Image (cartoon, rainbow over all chains, first blue to last red):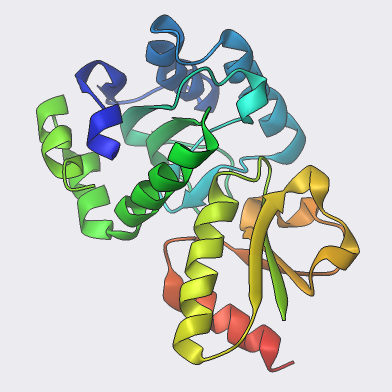
Length: 147
Length: 87
């Protein structure tokens, strides 16, 4: 499931980014470009972050930004951004964030399967670490093909 | 016991937490009703306890709240749930 959605042009590896806003911009870019999400989806993430804090930081190093389906999710899609040096999302216990997985869930049935796969991946710490240490998209694809 | 996992949209981390809580209840042999919802839908009467990521805990104003810093750390989640049940 993950490997079907996380294709080469939806994966990006950066050494560093200026701030969490740039990280959100960069992780949204491929899905805006291919029509999987609208710009309003990204804006909804910024707005909710301002209101609630980094609600999508789920574990050390890991953020899974997403908004509600009705806020501009057009297709079920994922985009992955790795920031090698890490970036602060102002999360009290889980900063710095190095793995940012943008989730767009438009269809609720497929979404259940998708969340299950993502959860399984996040719970395999050694694979999360491998993905963060990867220097190419191909290496990342090699790890996530198991999910 | 009714447990409600909460996140801002009701489809990301809350769903992941629900799956883990169900696994934990099974392991420790406790009967419970576990669901997930979004922050905007939370009402005090919908559950005995709410469970969410740490960064969202302050936004839930009703009832008992268990805050989870790391949703992949099942052992810590289990400990917090047992701590709550033993109160």
